[in-house]
Structures are given as C-alpha cells and as structure tokens.
Length: 427
RNA sequence: GUGGGCGUAGUGUAGUGGUUAACACGUCAGGUUGUGGCCCUGAAGAUCGAGGGUUCGAUCCCCUCCGCUCACCCCA
Image: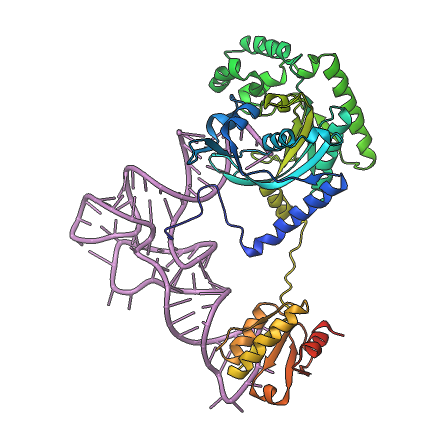
C-alpha cells in the first residue's frame, strides 16, 4: 500500500474523469448565463464567526462539521462548509445593494465538511449554487427553482422530483414551533431517543427523522403551512401558483408539497425546496435551497431578502453516469509523429511545434523505441494519423502519413508544417 | 461519533495451515530486415493493509490497530 493516500472523504479526479466535470461545469455556466446570473468567486476560507452566525450555532454544520483552524495571526478561520454565507458577505462588503436588485450570482467550487463519508457524501465536495439577493417577491423563488430544474434537465437527467415547503418567517415561526413542541410532547413516548433530545433545541428536525416509528408521528404533526402569517401565506400561495405556470415548459415538473421538508441550516425562511431522483434513498438530494430573508441582516448588512440553492456536483456527476446522459469522446490526438534516429527526432520535434501552433493536436512518440512500439503507442492513443519520419524521409523530404482510423494507404507528404497541416485537416 | 461488510501486483479477481502466491486486463519488450489494431511469446510488478498471538510453520486461525466501503446522524 502506498504510504500516502488522498485524505478520507476526498478523491482525485483523474484525466479520464474530467470530461464529466467539464460537461457539468459548462452546463452550469450556460444555464446560469441564460438566467442572467453572473459568476462570483469568494475565498475558500472565511472568519469562523461568519459561519457561526450565518449558518447558525445550533446546526450540525457548525457544531461538528467545520474545518476550523487558527492562522498564524491568531484568527480563527474556517474552510467554507457552504456557499451562501460567503456570497452574502461579499454582497455587503462591496455594496452590491447599489446595483439593480436583485443581484443574481452563481458559484461553482469546493466546500468542506468534516463528516463520515458515504455514498454521495465527501469531506471535500463541489457545489454549483446560485443566489438572487435583494428581491423578496415570489417570482424570484420560482425563477431560482426553474433555474435548478432546467440545470438538471440540461444535463440530461430525468426522473427527478421537486419537493417544496414553506417554513414561515420570524413572525409566524415561533407559534408554529410551539405547536410542534406541544404536539411532540404528547407523543414523547413514541419517538426515538434522538428526537427526544432534539425536541427543545431543534423541533423542526424531528419532522424529517427517518426512523419508522417517527414517520407516522411526523406525518400527523402540525403543518408549517397551516401556521403562516398573512405575508408568508400570500407569498406561499403565489409561489405555488407561479410554479404551476412552469408546467407549460416542463410538463414533468410536478412539485410535491412536503410538509416534512425542513432544512438543516438556520437561515432559511419561507420557501424551501429540494430536487432528488424519484426512487432515491440515502444521500441523494441533487439540489436544495430556499429563501433566507434574515441572513444578510444577521451578518451585519441591512435587512435584505435573498434566495438560492446549491447542487451537489459529485452527486450530479454520479447521476449523469448512472443515467448515461453524457458520452465521453474517445478521440485521440490528430497525429503522433513516429521518428527513428536522431535527425528524425529533431525534425519531429520541430514539426510538432509548428503543427500545434496551427491548432492541431500533435505529439511525438517516445524517443528511442522501435518503430513497431511507436506505432503501437500511436494506436493506443487513438490518434487519427501516424506521421512516420526516418532517415529515408529526411532525405527525400517526404514523410509517410498513415491513417490509423481506417485501412486507407499511407501517403507521402512533404515535411513542411503547411503541407502536413493541410493533409491532416483533410483538405 | 455509532453499527455492518471488506482489505492479495496499477486495476479486477483466484487461492492454500507447509518448498519459487495464480489468472485476466494494463505496462514494457520481442515475434529477423523501418509500420498500429487481432494473435503468440517473454519481462517487470505483491514485504498477501500494519502489529501482536496460536502453531514446528500462516497470506489463510485469533486479537488489536489502520484503511476502504455502506448505513445512521445530517446534508449537496
């Protein structure tokens, strides 16, 4: 066994895997652009307080999952566990409230959480997320959901389901939490130990407990949507109405109101949603998000509404592979130059440089190997042509250009960049 | 943090309480004179995850640790 391995929960993305990532990233950027979202990059680490206040002290993320360290100046820093807090910090710091609202931004990068890895979960993971900050209207909620849905579709992934809920805001949530606690106290003997612990601290969490005995209790629990205040109620009604309008474009967009959908971050208000494969189990959420109207104020800005989502690229790529929505090209270089002897080696190197400068993908076969070995090498790279140069070709000035993808005969081509470029291009 | 499964060449696997641990793919080299794909031959490549124990002797049995993996918690 090698003495060093990638740290637990991390992995290498080897060259052969990269096409999937490039496809996902390209699709993300294109979809974002379609909706007018501009890319933002924020630091990989931020002051620890930003996450403690933004994400919430009581969340699992803050309590046990952060990569926190003290830097040499004695400040506590944390590798970002999610993207929204950093983007909101940037929004405040750069006075983006002076731009036309809402400000639409997206990011695609790595995040870090110290958790036990399992299928679809890593310590370093990648997310493509979007944030629309500065407009509290339900139209933006639906815009963000549509963006998420169309991203998934643009990747070719089908068979997904949108689940959505409203968890109210600072005004109406306290009453709902009271009702929830009261309800669960009445069933305290029927729920699991974990849930008893959570009752006072994080009552919302009880709802999504997956243990069987808790499921039935959760199903009959008070619904947050029954406790919404006037404003939240109106907002929620508009969101569902607007969602219905998306069906013209996406006939399979059947949103499902899940009263037990809550989310693990404290900053969410009103709309929360998730997209996951229909027949999914375990860590399969492809995309999740919601509104966070109190977050900016919480971290020191003016009261500003916002909404966004994050999609897990590691999971999305796994789904792309599972559904085989993307075929990786096996195309090799345009040509490999097979060269025998020192003079030919010099010529090969110079010609390869010239052809690359012309935009052709050309490499030289490993020096010092037999011709047969170099031909095998060219073939194994799936090159279109082998260009053979030995003493005879140096002397005659004509190299042998041999097609490797067909049984056509090789042809003599003058050893000049112009002639070779033309021949390889097929003109 | 808790529980289950698994740890043999780069990868995927086989195997046995006892001399040189096997096969496939991959890599490299050959199959006469400068030409790939198929085929054939050969070579390199594994302290059988680590440490301890049982035994005359362990890769194989036992214990501990480490790692991978799946699940729980939670989330992307």
